[in-house]
Image 1 (cartoon, helix red, strand yellow):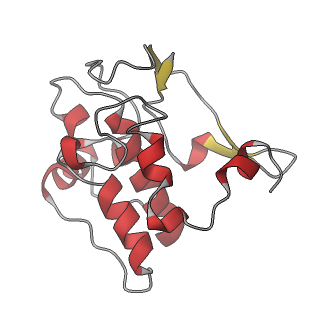
Image 2 (tube, rainbow, N blue to C red):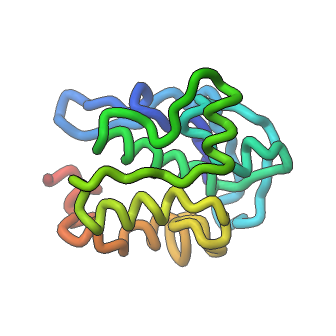
Amino acid sequence: KGIIHRDLKPENVLMAGDGHVCLTDFGLAKEFDHDDYVFQTRTVCGTTEYMAPEMLRRKGYTKAVDFWSLGALMFEMMTSHPPFRGKNVKDIERKIMNERVKFPSFLRSETVSVMKSLLERNVSKRLGAAKGTMFEVGGVAALKQHKFFDKIHWDKLLRKEI
């Protein structure tokens, strides 16, 4: 089975006692068949600052929403604020739907590249959202191949050796 988390945000990413990162709060998560890349759901849920445009359109969305949220989460980790801020929820939603992300000049080019690729409004062009299985052809596999992650030893990380 695959899972769409639907509420990736800093408060749901914790550090375990062994120093490794843990994802928490699966209360809004939705299960789907692992190899079903056309699975869609329609519930609008999560935290507005991290919601993907297709969720805000209320016409159905796929696992791609989590890749958008990852981009928003990375942006906040690098800048100390989410990519879209506003006076109220409607203002934030409008910005997510229409405004370009402004990347600070102190960010390295590969950092901007990975975040731009994740914060792509066109779902079919979004990093990680390509048709294919979640962990193989598209999805996480595509994300792991981005230049930003060049120095990550994924097998060692999975085994918690680093």
